[in-house]
Each structure stands twice: as C-alpha cells, then as structure tokens.
Image (cartoon, rainbow, N blue to C red; front, side, top):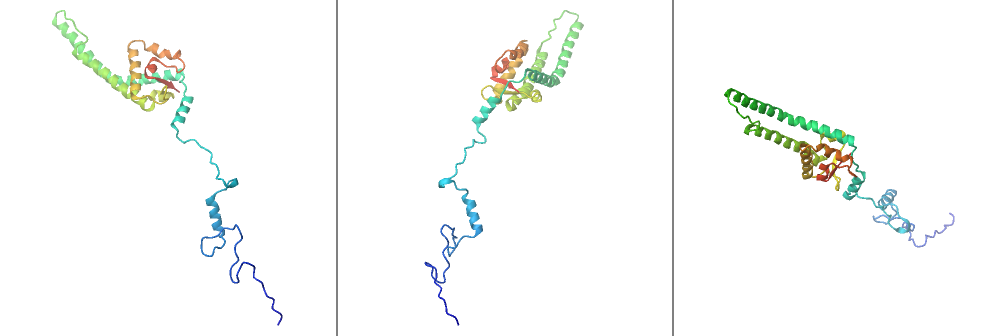
Length: 238
C-alpha cells in the first residue's frame, strides 16, 4: 500500500459542513441559508425593478389628470369658433319648417273650426234681415287663438328650449353641425337661458324685426351673436 497524503480542509470551514456562499450572493429564507435558486432570483429582481444610479428611486414623470375640468374647459374655449353663417341659416330654416309643421298639426283643425264659426255668424246675420255687426274675435275664436298660441309655446319649449339646454342643439342644428354654447362656460346653456333665447327670438319675429335680429350676426364681433344670443349669453359654434 502507498503512503496516505493528508488533506487540509479550507480555513473557516469545519469538516463535513458546506462551504459558505460567496459574498453578495442572495440567500434563501429557508433553513441552511444557501444560495437562492434561479427562479427566486428572477422573482426578486422583478419585484425590485431597475435600480437608479446611486441607489435612488427612479423619478416618475408627472402626467396631467385624465379628466381635468379646467383643462377641458380651456381646450373647449380654445377650439370654439362661431359657426359659418350659411350653416346657421340652414339650421334656422330647418327648425322653422319642422316646428311649423308641428304647430300646423294643431292650428289647421282649430283654424278650420274658427272659420266655420265666423261663417255661421255671417249667415245668421244675413238671414235676420237686419244690419248686424259681426265680430271676428269673440269668446269662441279667442279661445281657439289661445289654443294655437299655447300649442306654439308648448311645442317650442319641447323642440327648441329643452334640446338646446340638454345637448346644445335642435334637430336642425344637429343636421347642419352647429351647436349653441354659453359664452363663458362653452357648454350648453341652462334651461332658463335656452328658454329666454327662444322666447326673445319668437317675440322679435312677431314684432316684425326678426329679420334685423337674424342679420345682426353679420356685423357682430367676435362671436357673431344675434339679439336672442345676447339676451341668453350664448353663441352658435360649428
């Protein structure tokens, strides 16, 4: 038999014990304190994220809020422009025709009844053989006129004021791509503002100055408002 060569154990490690891991290597939390497995190291790196130079946390850039009301209002104000006059005129003509058709559905039968009532009074006066003054407006015809005016008011509120307050547009304005907006808010006007806008427009039309009211937007600057727009604090955007 040959000579036996003694083997010297590394310093700091007792015989029969595993060697200590290298400095800086990650350790497991389990017993033994051995080096972490490869999946554990990947998991830890994914949780810690990239380290910034010098050990500082990375700076996250500031992002504006997704729905900032002030930013939205500023953008709307910057993008708002008065609608072209051709679009406004087309929208007004469509609205007038549509509202007129709705009112006519009530006014025509009531008007026919009023005509028959007056004709009956005239025939009765002829048959009497005396000179009789026939009044065109009496209790019956006054009530019928009230029915027509009431229908105009109710249908005008339903067709003009309510949609303008809710969406800023009527059917005619939607078809022409224009919208009524408040000067300051750049949002659809309140119901009171929309109602005032329509009532002023209708009253000026009855007073035979409606044409001047409509043409006023040709000279008004910068929002090209008509008189009913000025009364409600609105303008037509498009």
